[in-house]
Image (cartoon, rainbow, N blue to C red; front, side, top):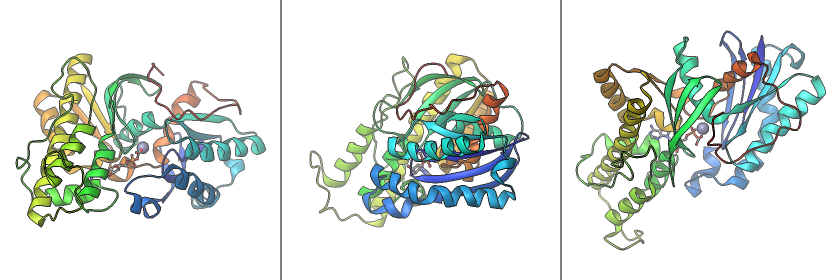
Length: 342
Ligand code: KG4
Ligand code: ZN
């Protein structure tokens, strides 16, 4: 069997052809980073319009590279939750239209579950049951994943996502967008203990939630001076930028690692899967590797190319297809996070 998977939840227009043996026949990702760079974050209206221009060429390219026609597909799958409303709609309408004209079955993809499934794709073997941590530009959530179609939300950020904090702090430090890669590069030359930034809810063991907005504010004050929100006058040396980047990154990684370990403790599970753009962060990967090794926990981290948004991880749709979980053409976009068990 082979399916077409479509991903337009945020600012990447992506399509892939994958087989039920989890072989990738083609994978196309059209990034919009250039369009959003000057705003230091994704502008929803710009993202939706760009998806509209790219969606058909991207799907076409995915089919061409796989050497197949629409008629050869067994189903069409699309990420319909969570994400930006306008962005989700473009992928969803494209998928539904293709299903309407070809009569192929429609399968829904939960974008966050798919980020965890990226670990399954890379491992080439079962990773469930596991604790799943998704840390991306739009989300930071922990799940108890009993199986590929059974995810229970354990907790998540109550304000900004980890990646959003990376992007905004990078903008404050003049490091560009997206912020994760340049911050981790700058941090390599910095002292992670130069500034002690807040860890949000990391010390609260009663919940599996995160908070990164206070950290963002703390970095702002560290740049501009206490109580001064305007940092435009600040002239930072390369050393100061490196120290700020390293101390900030340390605080984010501390929070993510602490709550992942707490989730493993609470659930009693022996496997941790990490996905989402921030999973590309080297310090986070190294820290988790050390902590899980010490505890005898199996760790799966999505490879760099499957960390940021892509359509390959949409192969999770096969799991629903196998269970006969098909959608009607009434399927809608659900921008918000669904917290109940799905
Ligand atoms: O998963 P993703 O492509 O988009 C969402 O679904 O949100 O994640 C993008 C996020 C951006 O915020 C980017 O700064 C962050 O992932 N990111 C990183 C790294 N590479 C990308 N954050 C920290 N360290 C990295 N190396
Ligand atoms: Zn994502």
